[in-house]
Image 1: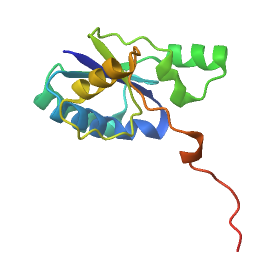
Image 2 (image 1 turned 180 degrees about the horizontal axis):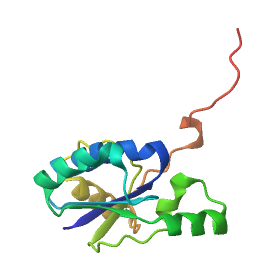
Image 3 (image 1 turned 60 degrees about the vertical axis):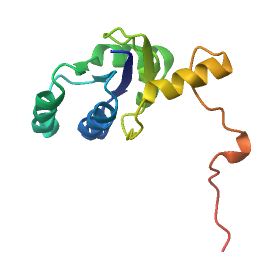
Image 4 (image 1 turned 120 degrees about the vertical axis):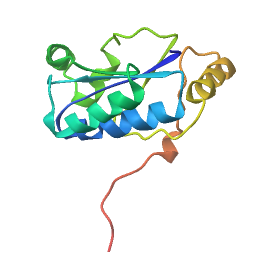
Length: 143
């Protein structure tokens, strides 16, 4: 495996786990998906996970990290969706891509796109810095 597509989630976001796994692995042969969760067993998606195991065998891991969730949330006063930046993936690959669990990836050669971006920018990560004027602004509507 060349890239570990890594995320962590809790609560209702665990419902996205099967789609996250499927969308990333279906389009990327060199990828592994690792997801940290707050509980060992989540019955609501068990059947979907079992089907994915048939298709993708050992190309993904969903693992309990609730102790780490609690430690990091208390120590750094984190909101749950930022815990993924503090957890070390268990599966070692050449690259790690940290994602949100509710992102559907339909790109092929996912890792190639991001490696090319790192080479272009000279940075050890691939991300887009959005100008502040392009961010969603929430305010009161004037009627």
